[in-house]
Length: 274
Length: 296
Image (cartoon, rainbow over all chains, first blue to last red):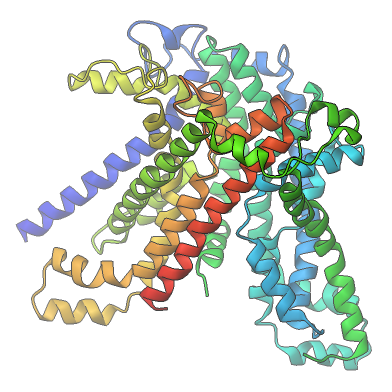
């Protein structure tokens, strides 16, 4: 019995240590964002602010106008999420449930293309956007993310379980294919759609490289691009930069805490291969 | 595969928007990068595409002779194949700890471990730049308590890449942990019961049941981690001012970005992109091979 208590103690000590190591950077980020100017760089550097101040957050929204970039990010992530939900669910459903010649070959082709990382496409994509006049526009950010192979794959896997008789019954009743998709399929897909919405929103919010490339005008920068830009100019302003980091991280972190179950379900759905 | 006319037409309509987006904004550019890599497309061509000339393999020749490229490739491979296994090891340890029978507050620990995964990489890179500060950084302060002298994490070429690896482990281990937890849950309980009847201890259970049964998960987790790490970009962009000190954290993608979008040597950068594609393809093929070996 004693041995058991000891191993339980050791186990929980290890768990706790790892939790402290994991949480510390995030806790310090919040803590430092509330310190007075220069306090984080005093000797010895404190972990908690001697006095809480909100001045850096005020400065973010007034002098640095980060509110604008926050709205840019919010707008783009929302647009990407909604449009990709629609396009991916339509295509995924078609691959799972509609019979047409060449279906399996086309799907296999898409899956094979999943190996290619997005960065490989970015140089020609930029030239394409330039010829379309979409450099430095919101469309330039949204368009390439409006449909994803992974999203189509996830919807298809989920839609395979929809009973074909249900669809056939609706057809016999004279419902059009689009009506079937809207009134029968979409409600059944709801769990996977919620998961994908969380996924896509976060991925779009956190995205950095493509917005950095395609957005050239400061006013259109998303939050991560603006933050990266500011952190170069304000290297010494630790507290201010931590406030900016908190502003960037908090929306997705809170979203994760609220919708944790759906998010983690998505990982195992995509992760369990074959 | 047959289908009636109405169904085929519906399928086409449902597929068209999604496939159009993927075709035009992903597959077409991927094909384009291959063509682009055989040209001298640069800032003059950007103004007038007529200024582009066919170069044959000269971009690739230049690439192979570029010391900076080899440095970037070496850094990227080190990041992927040192950082990858390290991440997988921490993920596995975390999963085993959380999954243990006597562990309490499992959900809480899992949430805390997972939180870094969802955070914005750029913001986190900004935070860690301060954690790594030689004088005021938290890390050196903690190391100071155990008598380890101040390390200039991001300023010393011997440490900078390792510093980025540590950040990556912290940020990503929670993701793999979730996959390992799913793998652990799929191991039949009877195996453990049988082992207990035979009097096997915790370590023997781990060695003879848990780890072998996790084989397929290991492979999958290892490869997605390595492939993700081969795309290293934001960390050096934000933390080491674009790959410093003395290119010790320059990655292949960062090199491509600088050549292509800072100096507008897009033909040359396209060759870099194509090499990146080949490296990632090779790692993925290796997975397919190994997967057949493991069986399943």
